[in-house]
Amino acid sequence: MSLIRHLLVIAVLLGGALTSWASLTSWASAQSSSLVKSDRTASTSSVPAEVLVVLAKEEPGEIDPQLKKLTALRRPPFNSFRSMKILSRPKLKLTPGKDALVSLPNGRRMKLTLLRVMPDGRYKVKAAINRPDKADYLPLLQVVASAGDPFFVAGQTYQGGTLVVGVIVDPKKTAQ
Amino acid sequence: MQTPKTEDEKLQMFFDGELAPEEEAAVRRSLEGSPEGAAQLREWEQLREAMKSVSADWAGEIDSDALFARIEGELSAPVVPIEQPKQEPPVLRVVPGRRERRVWGGVATGFAAAAAIFLAVVAWPGKPTTVPVVRGSEVLEVDFGSNTGTIFEVEGGAGESLAVVWIDDEEVGLP
Image 1 (cartoon, rainbow over the protein chains, first blue to last red):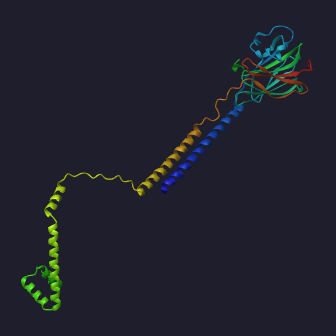
Image 2 (cartoon, helix red, strand yellow; image 1 turned 135 degrees about the horizontal axis):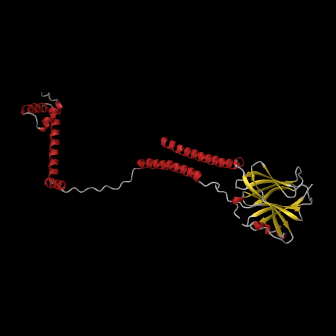
């Protein structure tokens, strides 16, 4: 009976040890996975991006055919514009931690910085629009955007119209 | 070599009629020579006669031929196996075995439980490895500076929500 009791105790201890080991392994795996995800900022190379600079006016006119796929521009608050023209469409690469500058037609510059790639795959981007050496217009804007889905900064007046700036990160992955 | 007979043995043999004639005559003379011996001799003779009488009575009552015939008949009869009554297993032999099986069952159950827990923890699907795709864009933080502004959400082509930051631009023109 003594041997059997020993075996019983060993079985219980073995079960506990296996459970602890499995939990530790699972936790370590989760931690490792989390670290991998958080380290994606450091390991992510530059991500392509596209900035769409559109001059929108309320006067009736033409809507640039290239914008027809952007159905969001036909919905409020953009539906008051009757004409839209693409002024520029610069492509750039966003590198984590490094600023990318885009010149706007009104003399301001848009500064874009890729902060990190979120665990869900979205990109956390910081944007700012100002005149050179100024910080009074749009000092800070932080957004998260999925690949191919734009975010817009609008409202700057220019040549009787309004500038609508769309930023698309990783546009090739767009599902639109 | 014949050992000399003791007095009791000689008396017993005399009484049973097993002594030689000269020895029997000598014993008889010795017994009849004293009153105690003569009295003892008479008692033994009466006892012997009583035993003979009882033996004759028993012999008359018992049919020895029939008895032997019955014995021989039973001996020659075919052997019938005796059905053993079902016996309950001795308690003292069963209890340790059951207890032992129970304990071994406990050990096996312990191992099985450990294996099940191990497999459950290892194979249990934790957080889904494939994070559901989140579409659209959203504003986390905005600082309009000296201006005012509004944050909109506009629906994209796939129904996703797209962020729109609208700034009320009061400043016009280049510096």
